Length: 159
Image (tube, rainbow, N blue to C red; front, side, top):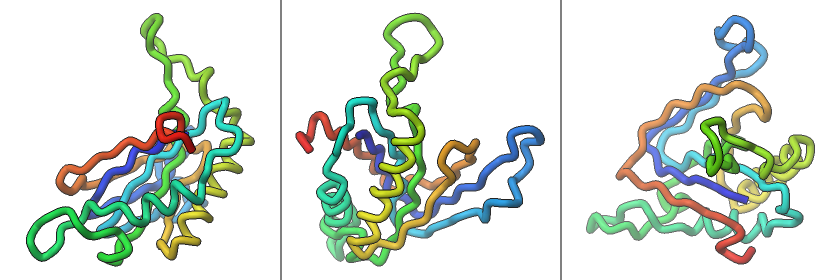
């Protein structure tokens, strides 16, 4: 499992109609103020990543400024929210040729299930979670705050 976490002052997502490029009326655009945008992808070998551990780590991550301007407060401390975006392209392989290969990404059915479970684990950490739509063409807008961008890779974390 790979997560790109971006600390944001604001972010939003909508879904574009594949044929017209216009906003899809069946999806209500989602937006947050201060918090995290999480780009979330699952690899083909991610059998049972420890979703609860990752959610807890994210909820407790101290990257928001305290009164002294030091990164010492968590998303819970500042009342922030999460915008969770499924992104299989985190498993793109670009070693050969110029067209990325996505064979390392988990099959969509299993990946969707894992992403939903991960969002539930974040909610269990008392975080407000807003989401994009799995498998859709999404348009994500954000203002990266800091900038702070952190990569979580379950292979490297041993979870």
